[in-house]
Length: 69
Image 1 (cartoon, rainbow, N blue to C red):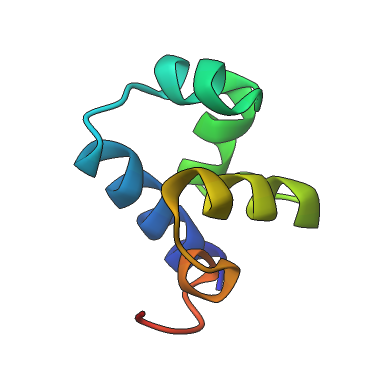
Image 2 (image 1 turned 45 degrees about the vertical axis):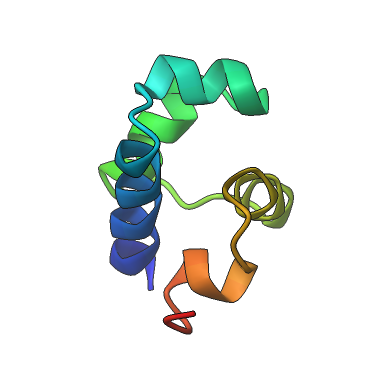
């Protein structure tokens, strides 16, 4: 599931043409955390998943890779 989250996060970020730094500023999540998640070095906590899903206007299930819609 981590790799699916990593893929989805990066895809969503790139769709909005955001750098990791820009996403960090928009969401209040550190740039280091975003980089670690995208590189599958760490897993996000529930609050971060919710914050990112809200920002990208997707469900938490989608960003976690549980569903495709």
